[in-house]
Length: 461
Image (cartoon, rainbow, N blue to C red; front, side, top):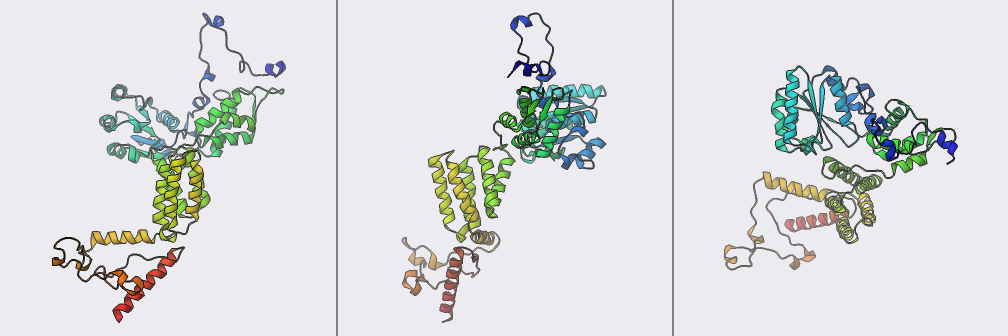
């Protein structure tokens, strides 16, 4: 790039690092721009919070709770970058509390006790304290229990943040004393607004630089961020601060620059949390509903997030019997073969086999008749008087069995015309299996009708 272009850059934006001798004896001062943009742009007030309107819009529960200052504990859960930490800090300022922060990943009981002792001292001095615990699900039961006495006495206000569903990750006593709010990934429009604010903010953001950002570039960053505000702002800063100004003196943030800055989209998929099961649920329900495109989308998201093909195929095997059943008996065989093939081939090529199997199952005729039939039989076993095995059906292949009458009266199927023994195999005539007229099950429906009519005519004669 010509030197004249470099001269148009904002002061120090592309200044080379100082040599060691230039630093000798110099007084070091903190450069605010060294702090990541995502950190600098954290909201300071509720009005600055972007997104989460389902809980923070005026009149919504969390908004009312903060305005009335009527809460003792809050638990925020949601994916990374949804604003849990920022919201906790905003609330602390809104309710005029001293903010203490700890991360459960690197903390322990000793640090917790130290924080609570500080909270007690400040409380005695008339100061209100809010303790924010990030990744609170990482605390074991004993660590969570340490919080309870001071929490019940009102020594501090607790705000916990977690990417896991609190219903599964936190103790019952802690949950019973907390209000739980789910934070959702920010949509593309919210992320674009957040980036536009950062570009305009000269004090905390990038407003001090001459930047022209294309709308499509911001939209590309938003889509690539996958609802993560931190990732969106980091990509924006990377693109803006690594692109040299053009001849007009402006840094042009184009779609091409945005693509380079985003690199590869990170798909959030916590394989140990409830989101893991949410994705699996969406996938299976799409297969059951015969929406092949939705099923492929959720499959792709699971694969991109690092899900194990074995887990996916186990769910598909269950669906092949539960939801397809005899409407297409090949579905179970087909899926079992896909499992074996995926284990032989391995990723990344196994995704081809998965796609093959998913499209087959999604478009297969559906019937849960066999599943419902078994459930009905199991319900009778649990609730009705149990039947004993009739003598005619009992095993007679051991010494003394015939003296007990075992096998007496049994009618061997192959001795009868049509290979149908006209025999009652249980006392009750209750029917469980009601085949549908879909797919291959229509053939079974006709067969069942034939056997029932044959049996009826034999009894009537």
